[in-house]
Image 1 (cartoon, rainbow, N blue to C red):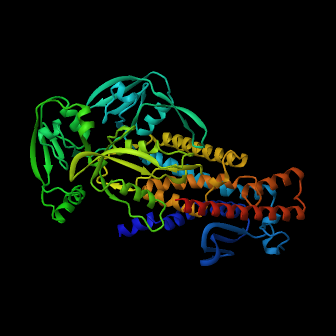
Image 2: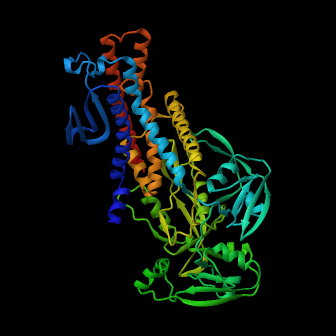
Image 3: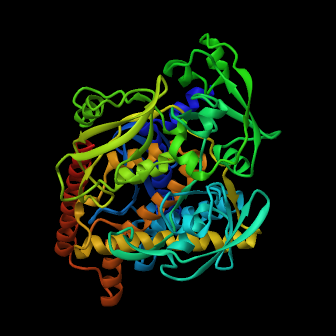
Length: 580
């Protein structure tokens, strides 16, 4: 049952129908309830467009679901111009209702969307949202490493402000370029204060505007303690550590991550306990991340081996000789015929990268100690103006060939677009890694009381609204190209991705989508609620409705506008499909 539920929730089409269905239902319910409250007769309440899939009638109102799940509508009696009003419905027709009643009905749909968004954000503030813990992985070159910050440190305060999650680190450091900053960390239960000055780097806002930010050279942390050891004269080979070993204990202390072993071995002589499989191959190593699966596939049980390290192990020793299996290629991605990544995949294969290879570093990019650093290194190769292949010289070792070797690769860049639909050239690495690392358990951020949750929910809703209004403004002023608009396919992707992120992420997406629909409908454009409010405002100002010819002309303009918008968003969706 749970498998079926997960499939339904993560299927983009189903997720799209649920997401749009909830948002549209609430919007139309706002119109419906306002009309009923004001005494206006309702003819139809529909979710979707096109032929009716299911319906029932109660009183005068027909409730129905239509086959095309792209919206909905409420049809009030008297919506059509010139519609005759029978005596029994006197005072219940929309076209004869006072302008203030019609204005309330027009505004009620967007208002219902705002209420939904606020209610969701208040609920999430009470329940709490899981966020990445403030544990860092320190990049090889950067302010943090020079200041003494170490991988695995938990940040407690930045410039005196308490840190609760990774988002706090990003926010506070970004706001302090070239400003001396005191950072307090927890390192194995010991509190340490460090002084550092974030470097000034140019980034950009969500809308592509240039922005100077602070950077210290840290990333989110994850590491598995299963290691790959390069052959040669190094402390690890001399002590008997082998590729594929899972470090489970150092001097009697259990370890769950590689950095814990690094910190303990840096203190002096140590006894290290590892779990080891014999006759190691890439295939057997890939199943060892799941002990039960490994045994089911005939890998047997690992043996426990004790190793002695007679001297301290430095951070440089680790960088030169050992990587976790997070950095080992498990297999190449399976690509469908015609996939745009196929030439890239063939280029990686032709230069000698194969399953079991572990990344140690790119020449010119320094050492690579984690998948995050590997990702950053590849991101540096992305250019909007360079379509040529990326020339790479990288050091790797293979589980079946422990000596480090150098690969010389020419990897073609793939054309794509970023989040603002700007052209760029991407260097893909279409592989999956041997293990996904040991993630730090997330922290749950929630409001301290219900009153605080209301304030936090309102603040979050206003922040979302500000972002949406800024985007709409930039679309209409031309600062943001219309190709950024998305239609049903884009929404389906967003819904599917949100559902894969879990129930809370999906609910958060409902809030954002509801706010989008509410604000968009308030634009003073024909055929939208904002357009109706504008005409009703003109009518209130002049004391009488606009001439029928003007109303019909406005309606035609509105229909033409909506049809043009539909064509545009579908065209944008199709372009995105062909580009990915």
